[in-house]
Length: 409
Image (cartoon, rainbow, N blue to C red):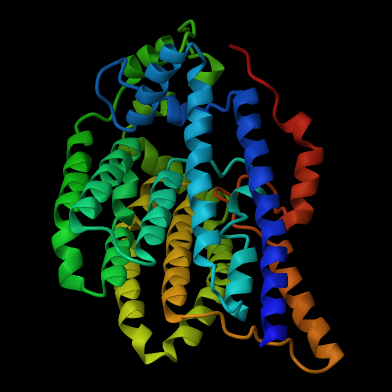
């Protein structure tokens, strides 16, 4: 038992190093987004209500008002919100691992390019508004892990998280079943979860219905751009040509663009393969946890929630080319919920499983995990040549100065 405890401490130390690496790289990417004035990442968060109420405008309105109050650029407020969302997600993973037995599926899932390292391996994939929902889900699970808060507090938290998510990016409504699954598993009652989640989910849906009538247009984009201090030109200044300008596009434009991307970049050849790689540790987790009869109800709740969300989110794959992002949201939410289920299974940490007997077999297992963790990635859009995980990332960083340059104001 003492040897098992020592091994668990060693695993946790190694994971601490890995999580610190992920957090540091994520922080550096956030600073870089501000430096280059990313018109998709930062631009999406800077959409505001200066041109009237419009979809996705709440974070930008908060950033604009806070920036004026504090006399700083709203970009720094956006960066703070982004880092807080990532911090919540990372802390939640750390907290849910507090008494893990470091099973094989846990180890592989932690180093998967489709979970914690998603934004590390695809530098322009991260810092999107889904981190609001992911960080919020993580904090909800941490709150539920020991003694669930009073029902009124859960309703309030879910209502605030749901409304803020829906008014930040309407697509996040499609992932609301994971919030319901968290409450149902945490309380051990589907009926109790229905009572608590009814109002928050109704508010979230109402927000989604409302923003459908406020999709924006080019006039809205120009007013938003002007509110950020840019001289409005035709075409718009570089900072406003990404997510802000995209407000002028309707569903028919989005559908045509997505169809073009699917054909040009061979989506149906790439994404089934990387999705299969990504879900492998999830299949391992399901097999490992299903052996515990007491967990089967929770696993079924998770399965139903995942199926409902996946069915609802099919529309995203039709109208938005960021297929890797949508897959990532599903996987990270399921990842958090599996860690939550596994945490509740254990009263104290079990003795961590030993590596297979025989030196050759041990080396083979270590090599397999290393290859899995480092040699592939889940691109949010496959517009760049295959990067082959961290090796391709090194080449991307080396070539970065020729790929991206700071844009003017």
